[in-house]
Each structure stands twice: as structure tokens, then as C-alpha cells.
Image (tube, rainbow, N blue to C red; front, side, top):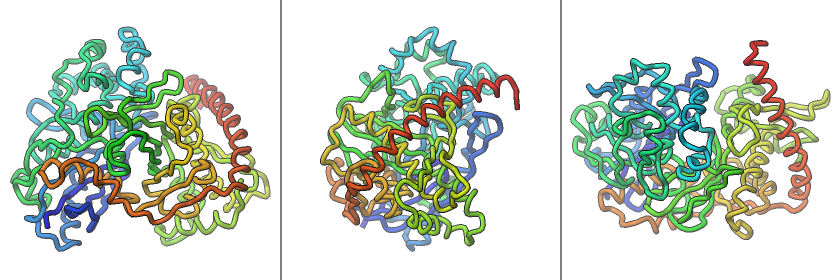
Length: 511
């Protein structure tokens, strides 16, 4: 039986997964890497850490399953978005550390770019609803202004998964889903918008050529084979951005398919033939894996990351470290819904475009001398769910969710207690399947399987999902959470105002 390797290149690390031709996950291997924060608003990673992770995870995966590398029919990657990795004319990576999706250093480029392009036209064309400084076009403008020597040497910029494809095959290209996060992609034309590239003062050639997500971009080179343990000549599919691969693996391709991704950051996405574009609430849109479909999403920037902060701050005494999440579930289970009047806002990484201000920062409200650590743990779980309920209500303007099940994917889906909180707060049935944390990997595997002819299309993906649990909303709990949501929204608005004031004081160098 032929096998597929799928790589999920995430913010926290890379997971290599082995699938058989029936979409069954056989084994996986995870390698963690670091994110660096050298300055305020800078978030960087080392592309060579990604490559090292690919090499190590591949070898571990093949060893774990005792898989003969000659059985691998193809491979593909899902990669985190909005990365700018500059490649020189000689093919070398020009920066050891590159800005990733959450890097927001390029805010000083707003005025120059939007003086030439009205924001409304830009957003309605690209669907780029996150803060503009997240997107590649402004990051490149910043590089041109502040790292001119690097910019002048740059031949092309590659995204995260495209850099790994380059290391594997020597080919420099991208796919529509990743290109749609560059800030210069026209969703209707399914191609770059030259007017936006001109407005940014950038050469068209700096953006990689676009090929279909399930196109074969090349084969594993001799050098890459020696480093990864793969066989020279294995086909590599172009792959896709994480949002699109997860949408593909979560629900396949179809109208109105919705899911929640509960990872380091978190989003709720829906697939449809028309992108959801709203100048007031700014959903963000990526091209889907199949031309003519889009995945539109709303998000919070920090979900699992905020929960991890709570873990590492409040449970330092719990050893071994891997036992902390289980202990947090035990602690939260002892506290009633509402966390005894304690609220948690999870915006530890700042506010997304669906929130009132990018300067919003996380907080607990309702602390008293009687507050326990257990209260704080449960409040953090409820707060992340409440933040996602607030952005879900934006999508509900466009998508009928009544009677639908909400599929939940990602690391947070493991917790039965947390899934029940989501059901109660969303007031929806919450579905967990066997795919669980493998949605993005399954999406990448589907692209590879189609690229090499093992599959024809994506209709079979939904059949790969086997229901493991459904959490039904408990009406009494939902009634409590609906009232608490009123307070949460009021408080979040006040936190945004406070965040703007604190940002002003920071600029005045008060600290």
C-alpha cells in the first residue's frame, strides 16, 4: 500500500504524519522550535529550524513506523501564513531569522501604502482582514525601508511551507492559498493584483509564481534525501497555507462547512463559493485548495498560547511538565460554570481585527481575596471560549449555524470538559472526531494524494471522520453564559480603550 507524508508546519513546531492511501493516520512525529521576540512587535523564527525539524521528524517518523522510504508515494506541507523569507539571487537565505504571521513591526508603512490604495478597495479585493502590518506586502515595504541591503539582494520571498519545498526540490513557487496572504492577491482574479504591487513600490518578480495547491512542484533532491531519510525522486506537492489545509482536512470542500481550530492561535472558518467580506468586522479570507472556493474566518490571536501561559505561570509546581494540562482539567472540573464570578480575556498577543483595538491585552476581572487557582484555570478556559463565541457571532450574520454541529480541531479538542464549555457557550453541538489534531495534516495529505493520482478529488475526506464524541449544550449553563457574555463584551471594550491609553503611554516612554 502506498503511503503519504504530510507535514504540519505550525507556530510551535512541525509535525510529520504518515498516512496510508485510505486516509488513515499511521504514525506521527513532532519537533518543537523557538519563536524569537527581539524587539517590541517583532516575532521571528529561523527557517533553518523548520528544515532541521523536517529532517528530524521525517527520520523519526520512518523509524517509528518501520516504514521503507520507497513506500512513500508523495509528500506535502501545510504551513503557517504571512511569512517573509528572502532568498538571494544565488539561492541563499538572506536572514537567519524572518518575520512570521504575528510580526507587526511594519505599522509605519501604513501611511505610504494606503496613500496609494484606499483601504476599503484593498480589503474588498484581497480579503486580508487581519491588521495590515501582518501581511507580507507591508513587511516587504518595511524591509525595503529599514533593511535595504537585504532587500536589494532579494530575488524572491518564500512562505514557510514554500521554503521547505525549496529545500526539498530546489523549486521556488507558491500556491493560491498562501499567495492570498501576501496582501497583493486578487480573490476574484485568483492572481496577483499588479496595482497593489506598484503601490507598495515592489517588483512583481519578488513574489513567487503561483501553481495549484495539488500540483507537483518537483521531486526530492539527492541532497535533501540524504538529510531527511526520504528517497530521491519522491514527488512533492505544492501544499497550502494552514487555514486552507485545516479547512480541507476538517470538512473537505463544500458550501457552508464550518469548524473551530483551537491551537496556539484560534479561528472559526467557513468554506463557501463566495468570500465573506465585511468592512466593519473584517473577516479574513484565504483561497481554498480548489479554485472557486474560499475559506473565510474570524480569529483570536492567542488561545492555546494564553492557556499555555496560564499553565506555565500558575502550575510551575506541577511536575512532570507534561502532566500539567491533565491537572488543569482536574482543577477546572471542581469549579462551577462562571468560575465564581471570574472572567479571563485571552488577548495576550494583542487584539485581532475582530476586536476593538490591536492594543488590547489579556486580563483577569473579578479577582478577590477568595479567588483560587482553580477559579483562574477554569476562567481561562471559559474566556477563550467566550472570545471565540464573540467572533462566531460575526460569522452568524452570513452563515446559518442553527442545527449545525461545530467540528472542533486542534490541541484543545482533547479536553472533554473544554468541549462541553464550548457547547454551552456556542449553544451548539460540538463534535470531536478521530481526525482531531490531524486536520491540517490530513488536508496536506489530500493535496499530495491528488498530486500523485492516488485520489481523485476531495469528496472522500468527510468519510474519513469518525465521530468520537458530541457535546450537547446544557440549557442551564448556556443561560448563565449568555448573561456573562454581556459582561465579557462590555469589559472587552473597556480593555481596548485601556490598551490604547497604555500604548500612548508606552510611546511617551513612561516605561
